[in-house]
Image (cartoon, rainbow, N blue to C red; front, side, top):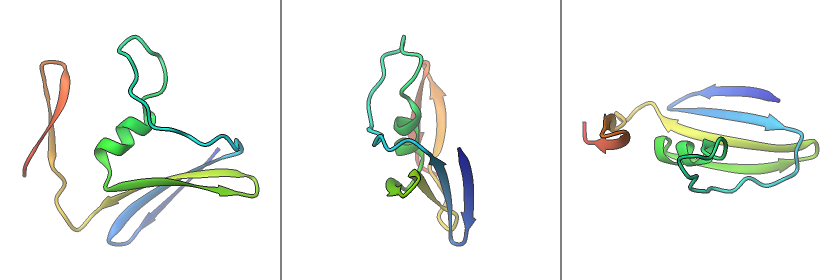
Length: 84
């Protein structure tokens, strides 16, 4: 596994791995021990995606640095988004 960070007007985080299996977004049950990664990425980043390489795949996520992100607060055990 390899990690690459690119900073410009956005922060792009890329994670490389040797698996050719395509990831998929799912909604895990509270008792599941895995499967929350892409769900969290989809909630907290501007956009994300995957691309296949000769040696596996890259999963990337983009977060704006120019625009203020919504603030997230914990309420009754779940995360909720609020403006500002």
